[in-house]
Image (cartoon, rainbow, N blue to C red; front, top):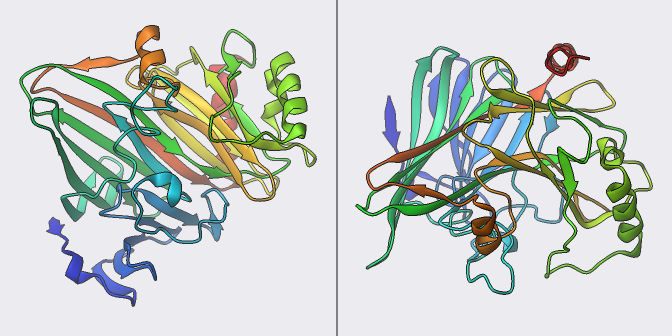
Length: 360
């Protein structure tokens, strides 16, 4: 069942919109006027912005918010995401992606992160994983004598699960091939003492720290000392020390991960209480990834793994690397990622899986 949404359905008071037993959907508006859809199950809830980028603004499971911590309390109407940035999941791309160089002409992370969607809907259904509620929508990009595509995201919450499925379809609606760059920006909350487990070796061949510093950032002196340590041994980022200052950020390229028998890779961020953040995806589809860490008084974000089709160095640099894909006319690109929360017992099971894959 698919129910189309209209902006007049949203009010300042959160209202139950769909009751499917354990699964429920609520509609509301933030004080800023931005519309929100809350999908709820027995484990917690997620909030999706149906019209502003179809961002997953928050994900709360077993009483813990998974999203990064910063000064952006609620989403606001702005022209670009950096003016209202505090989400859990953001779609980046599609024609361009990453931090633009001085020679690039595209916005930071492309046109998709905070565009206004043309359509939004709630879907109720069942698949091999069980019953779910989902938020989906349509954004159509069109410029005369240029590219024409349709982006169709879908974020699913399943009954009894604290993991969500994050899907994006991009259809080239033109007849000519078009450039394609995509990244799923997943922003977990960082915590000193939490530890990363991954199907990726902790060595220079597989992990490389970005040497450049974003042009919009001011540098904290303590950050330069940390960056020197990271360049010597990237594994120091496995656990954030209480005195570490990731300001403005440390970005690490994650290359050639070890895949399981189905081509999937696994990343786990286990907190001191035993619970964990988890992300898995098909690395044959999303063949590039980076890690983004910010940790200081104003910002605390652990982008444990940001899967994509390219690294985030801007269009020109990625074009030179061969990371800009060409999507033929009439064809569709599909990305599927699972991310969310694991309780202690589930986290231990994933740790064992990662250790088996890595032969530990």
